[in-house]
Length: 295
Image (cartoon, rainbow, N blue to C red; front, side, top):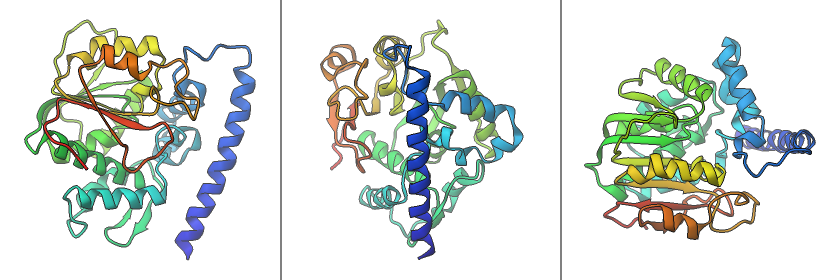
């Protein structure tokens, strides 16, 4: 009963804060063209990250700050339950020891819920585990080498993938402030080995074994998407991109982004999968270099 109230209360507060941000964002951007902005630039995310890395108090609880969570910590309690079902379907029994993953929630004070099968954990961490299991099924248990992630949030996915795969290097593309936050987070949980920060200004050519992005690539304006394709995605043997633009436009997020037809021209030949659990009306998954089909 107490947890049900907690879920309801958080959803209500988030709804009110989201409406507030939409109102003020429209007011602030009324004389600006948003076509060349990423989705995060249309929100208060970048300002929130800047404040977090400058304040020890905010840093300790950054996963509770709504202007940050609006972009990164978006997985609901119910979606966490769906992730658990997906994890079990993909081959990780819920009777397994999940405690090693709980280190992901040891910094930043995320909202955690009690799940009967595994205990208290944030639904975002469950989402990261579910994605790791998807990668195992798509690319095999022997997936290894150089991984790169576009839009890293705070490093939670990187942390989980390090528990599943032998990664010789984990490249991170993101804003400088986000990279600094990620470095602090991964340092705190002891997972900074083989992590390397990258910028599009780098001229070095790196060939990757796997490129991945949880929504971030799909939230970039088309011109920036093309640069990432040229410098990063096109140089990766395998790809796993969770998308929320390009195919349909129920949410309006596809405005100013590459269409699915354009993505087929620019990216390596790929296959489209359903996002499970589905977290948005325009969401889907782009995969290439895989040797298995996940149901």
